[in-house]
Length: 515
Image (cartoon, rainbow, N blue to C red):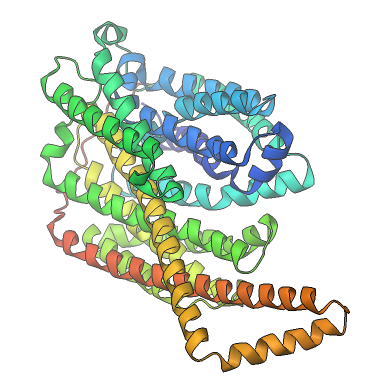
């Protein structure tokens, strides 16, 4: 039997591989302008560097459960880590935007298998206190990776070159691949399953998830279903979803079994994970947008400001472990939701001059709350499952968590646009009816500009532009306030689900681990 130290070391290696895969979702976020210039890409093409990875990863996450049974955890994780390393090197070598998108699809697809595999492994290898430790480690990885990705990417791009945000994966990726092949030994491969693969089920799942992600990613940018491409993708996603469910229920060998949804606790815990992930990803997205558009921060300034969220996570990890040992996980989730709601409420008073000092405590509270939400939800969803079902349940749980993140970002993007237009209209009306202050501001700007130029017409246009920019900035700040406040109320409403997530009775059943 593997010793406790050997299990922890193996789990640490796999968790690091998962961290690499999750960091690469957001590592390009702060470097898109540099990548666009380096590959001579059009502005409407560069967003696909991120979208392509997410779409491919979403398809792999539920598929990983089937592949883990067919190939074994050992070879699935080894192949995933090795091919992810190769794909990272290819992304660094990309010669144009088309090659970059293709390599990012490859990277997201193969790397996506590591995410649910590590969660399942944590529940197979450990019980009791060690399971709480493993869940806390994965909670830190799950939340810290998206937050630190833009910071790491911006730092590398500023100091070296954007291609190194991909090359940096090569050496650690090789190490993870070698160690995984050497150390993972707790299940057997069943390659005969590959011959029974239901290709129609796989195709339906791929179309459903990729089209759904495309709708969520591009919808806010193109006014949703008024855009032909978005409408077509939505219809394809709907038809593919119906076929996916039909094949899941009627196929003799489905790619993804929906049996975990027969457990009410799994359903409710997954819904909680979806809701809290929507809030986590949305807040992670909104704050850098605010700092960039309102404060004019560059990627390094943004990374420095938001990095304290990681401090909150690190503080919360041991606290979460201790609370889960002594209290009902539902109470821990409720505490996390309340703290998260308080954090969002503090964000809802954001002002145009807010920076590191003003955002410090909201960020710390968000980091603390995220751990208290994610880890207990995973424990409730996966704790009482047999080894055979863990991979599939982990895939579905992580799929819903990722979809929650995509849904959260899509919603806040739409709300931000709508509320910005609304506040801009109201401010314009107010200036038109009670415009004494605006006239004084315009006259003051004109006087200041007239001392710098003799062209009165240009001075007037410049003054008008400055006033307009100031009004737009204020409207945007008010929109951020509205969106954070709306998020706070919606997150608070998820508390109604918590009492119904009945935890499984404590189990100390040993899992079969080969020497």
